[in-house]
Length: 243
DNA sequence: AGTCATGTTGACGA
DNA sequence: CTCGTCAACATGAC
Image (tube, rainbow, N blue to C red; front, side, top):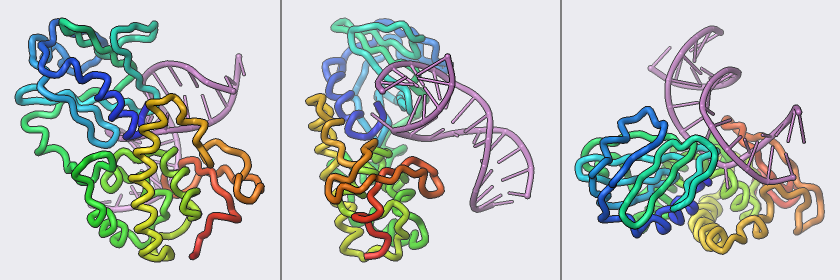
């Protein structure tokens, strides 16, 4: 469920609950989820991979981690982490991480680092890249402080698109190319969003989980790369360490 | 059936 | 203090 575009879809599917009173709360979360009972859901926001249920004076932050899911007006067998009932339906969250953020939500988040947000600031992202010349591009793309919402799929797909090797060092990548990478992150994230909504996301993957490079027919390399050791799929012929 | 993965945090030791 | 490593959480696709 995780990457940023999926969170935006989740939010859209829950819009009808905004402005509604929470009539009943259930679930095995250790947080004080009963606090939401009789609360009015003021707004739903997303920041990167965070889904934010905003109430007056506090916000419940839902993070799906690797396995988290949600259902609207449906149940499944796995333990319910959090269920919210409204007069027009209900939301169930499973194996998600839940935290409470006190006070004004804007005090907690910098919206300009969220790649799906209208306030996304490309220049700030570029500056943060320049500040990390020794980092590998595969690590930096997953940094939520720089590219909130980018996950491993987006990482692999955009590096394949721009023909940059995941183990390329930032300082070896020309600024124009770095800028192209940052622009592709935004472009691809919105394509991801459209494809996911249409249930055709996987068939548009060019690199992630793929075995063959469709450009040169050579086998794609599968390797855990960088300090984060997350799996990368790449073509060692098409994708360059130095440009 | 066993492996592994769209993720993050916290503990621990060097 | 910072860095790297590891465990923990927990589900479903293959």
